[in-house]
Structures are given as C-alpha cells and as structure tokens.
Length: 127
Image (cartoon, rainbow, N blue to C red):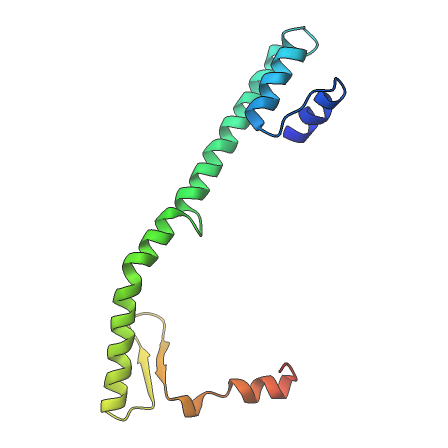
C-alpha cells in the first residue's frame, strides 16, 4: 500500500521515505483536491496505525525483542551456574551422561569422548 501511494506521488514529482510523509502528501495532493475519496485516506491511515502497532509488538515482544533480550540477560547467569554445577557433578561422580527428565528427556551433559559430530560430518562429507 505504501509503495503504491509512493508511486502515485512520483507522478506529480513528490515523494518522501517516511510513511507519515507519504500519507500527508497523499492527503494534500489527492484527497483534499477530491481526486480520491476521504475513505481511501482513512484506510491508508488505519493501515499505517496497524503497521506501527505491529512494529511496536515486534520491537517489544518479538523473537529478538526487548522482552526476549531482558529474559536472556536475567537468565543467562542462572543457566551458566546450573550448567557449571551439572558439569561439576558429572566430573565428581565420573558420569558419562546427565539427562533432564522433568519434561521431555533432554541431554544436559555428555563427556567429550562421546561427541561424534566429526564422524557424522565426515560420513556426510560436510567438513
């Protein structure tokens, strides 16, 4: 929608890179002059508002948003302590593997001698 209006503005040698500026120019040169109905302008304004809401949600709550970053910042030291404790227990008890069975079974620790990644990559010829 933004690019369509921007293309329209180019036909009258007008343009801007900001969404708000595009809408303002569209209203000034096309809606106020009666070329387009005010309803089109309302749709454009509503789309811009939805875009801003979506951008805000992504910034705050998206996969790399502020909430995720803050959780990571808070949890990283705790996770590091837990994994260090797991390694220490494995070493002290001479354990080869430690699994978490609280939910899905997940491998938390394995001795390096059991890491077969290089063998699998060699088998797949992906080295």
